[in-house]
Image (cartoon, rainbow, N blue to C red):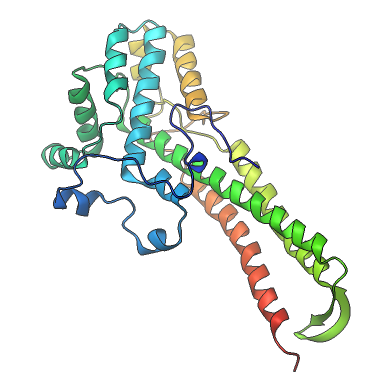
Amino acid sequence: MKPPSSNTAAPLAAEAPESSAAPPFEGQDQPAASAALAPIANVLAARYASPAIRNVWSVPGRILLERDFWIAVMKAQKDLGVPIPAEAIKDYERVKDIINLGSILKRERVTLHDVKARLEEFSELAGRQFIHLGLTSRDLTENVEQLQIHRSLKVVHFKTVAALLALARQAETHRDLMITGRTHNVPAQPTTLGKRFAMFGQELLIALERLENLIDRYPVRGLKGAVGTQLDQLTLLGGRADRVAELEGRILRHLGFRAPLIAVGQVYPRSLDFDVVSALHQVGAAAASFAHTLRLMAGRAC
């Protein structure tokens, strides 16, 4: 079984080996930058999250996603008539992987704006001023954050499928092994260990179907501008609404989403976050039920 793949410019973190480290970046020898911008400085994440998930949410990983997004927008805008030199795009692509967190932090202390700091850093590295045309900060940050969520869901999906496969193998192996079934934690009727594993798999399968549904229908904000009217892109593209629609469609394909939100303002609806959390809870609840029941099965009958 292979991990999920994506057609987006930046590779899906789940495709990297579990032992792979985060991408190398400059500025690691600067204590201030390390303290302020360390990837996911969280003991729970460091202890329990997989390398694939940590890479998706690391600071260097997010910056790479942002830069890929900017480049994809530039390419689409150029094709739709915006005067962006092809050499300028190549210059951005050439320096895309050069990430100096210390330098970005210094810029942010001056600009007091995180996106402006990262934008200036990238443009200075390339020696050009063509990214972020017609965009507002939320055109960048909302789409990238939703991309991080979507990719994380795919990692969880991959691991859930692997867990189901393992449960199915155990159910097959132990299909004829008789055990004492219990109700109220006291001996009741005979059953098989394989039946128990199948029961755990059934609950996890329900959670997997919920997760797959969410991944398939999860909508992205898209390029909507400061208040959701796409006015800046419409102005940039000469008032051509068809070109604005084509631009957004190309960015959706770059990100790997099927559909954008149609009527949205500066941010995507935060109720979508509840949808994500509840789906993750359902997957976790199936695993917790398995672990708890198996522990009771291992105990002695009173």
